[in-house]
Length: 118
Image (cartoon, rainbow, N blue to C red):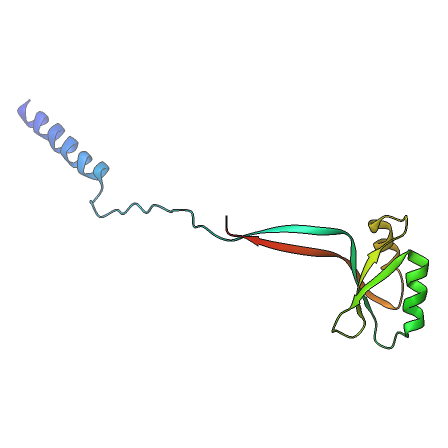
């Protein structure tokens, strides 16, 4: 009977070391870093319109009148305009119609980003 008792103690002793681990485990705590966040702010009436190369200024004026647009400024890239919707048509409708035109490479809302340190 004493022999069986020693075996049980040996098993329990071995099992307790197996459950405890080897003592070399490291627990790493991950702390959230403070990072800059971006807030996307869409200018509600501004769009960027890129015309294909070779588009004449008269066509740009025609598009302005047809879709109720006003040029805010011509950007340094050839054929890229910052425009403002001044008519009664919604921004989404204007963008949808401009994207269908052959002489326009792209038309997108003017997204502005603000970076905060919070």
